[in-house]
Image 1 (cartoon, rainbow, N blue to C red):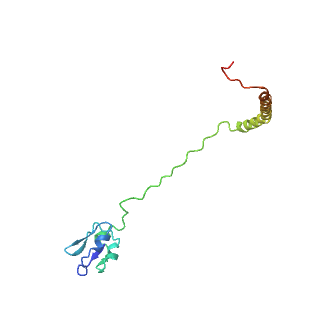
Image 2: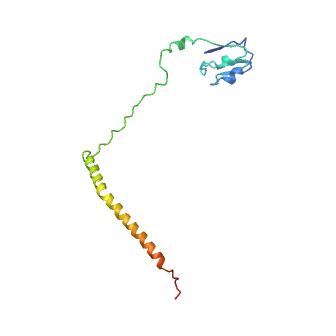
Image 3: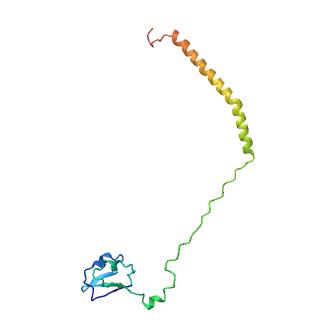
Amino acid sequence: MIHINAESCNGCGACVEVCPVGALSIVQGTAVADALLCRACEACLLACPASAISITALPAVMGAYAGLPALRPAPEVVRIEPPPAPEVAHSAALPALVAAVARVGQQWLPRVVEVASQVLQSKASDTKLSTGSRHRRRRGSG
């Protein structure tokens, strides 16, 4: 808690302006501290140009409560475990399935590519033949 020396205080109000909790006020030209609001942060002590403010020990009544825990308990830490990974059904069948797909791909993919190539080649040759012999006709003209 703070103590204000009334004889040294010049009533400038510098301490009132810096107090973060509003525990200080000027009464009849002298700074006065509210003991219930004061948190002993020492902001006023540093701001006082007259050095009229000092820190005092806690009163004897407050000393009896010094060993008690704070009013606000420490937060409880709650651990959240991630859900277990889902089990893959038929996991033994998966390698066999992959092997079967690979075999089908080896057998069918070359055939599909060959057929697609033949279709594209036949369309290309049809286009070359048809462009030279065909004339465009207008619709409606006889």
